[in-house]
Image 1 (tube, one colour):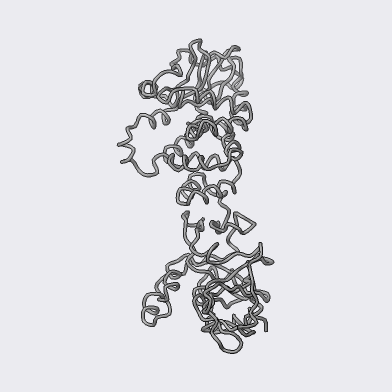
Image 2 (image 1 turned 180 degrees about the horizontal axis):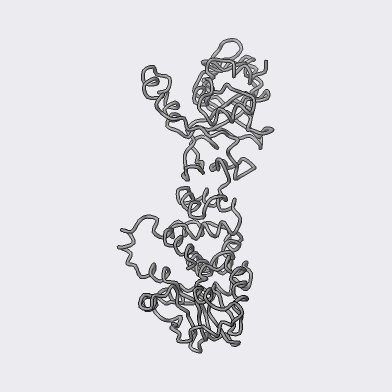
Length: 461
């Protein structure tokens, strides 16, 4: 019988209970598990019955499919130093840890590059609960013998884990009255994806399914609940496009913290997938030196769009306009315009209006999706486009743009230069968001900015 089987056979190991994780753990060939908190702090006894210290920790390393316990870590009761002993020298774990050698023969040991400590890397660290769309904390670790090795098979993220670590679970009376009523919140390790395969940073895990499967607004909610290091780790685990969509949904204060600590290369990749106006706002949050570095790493066309928007003052319409919109020439057929919408609509948020430009880039007309749907598919847009245009200069105030949008009930308004060349558009939502007083914003729902963007995308604004 090897050490892991001996440990599993002792009375400190409890029968597995609970529906989901029991089924998951049974599939890996074990039905007996024990919690780390049940052995932490117990006495370590050598082969001659002498107490040599108290168990502090366990080291783990990557196994075939799970993390395997490789060493015990205890504090010597003589020199008060930490001793790291291979699990192969452990006979069993009962009310204490029993070793197979005397104190004088205990060799010095240290962790290898592949080994990590449970208390430093897993316990009390954060996990993203995908099902609950929230961040939870690891309160205890579940261990079990699997294929001859003692493995980490799950994590306890519930209140039971906290009480167990405090020693309350073992007290009679309270255990039977309260503990039985508390739900088990255990996530099997097989349901967890490591964001860092090297296992040097297990500060964040993702359970049940990958975080990229979530809606960007849900990812943003999770990012806001994390510390900054874990925020960057989540964004790094996503594709650039998903990371861009999620970062756009994040609260501006959190955005500022994230981009200040983000590598220029990563920031450039994400900003290239963003609406230029959003990208310009994020670059305004970093130093001029970093902004210049990021722009230099971006594709020239995307960088030019962003730099154009950064050139306008904060109070001007040019600062909040986007240069991503749908435009066509006056001789375009309706059928061709729909084909263009199908291709470009994935990358452009505001597709309700189609702007018509002449060969020199001047704005000469506009049509709505409703106009297109009612038009003859073989006809051209200049047959029904509106030529009585309302537009603004990029230097116009944001308040002025908002007033025009409200007066004419527009979803967006075109921005042109003094010669009438089309520069971009300002949407009603973006304009309104910039004129709402700060004291009023504090009284709005906490997720107001997410709700606004979600509604905008739903309506194609």
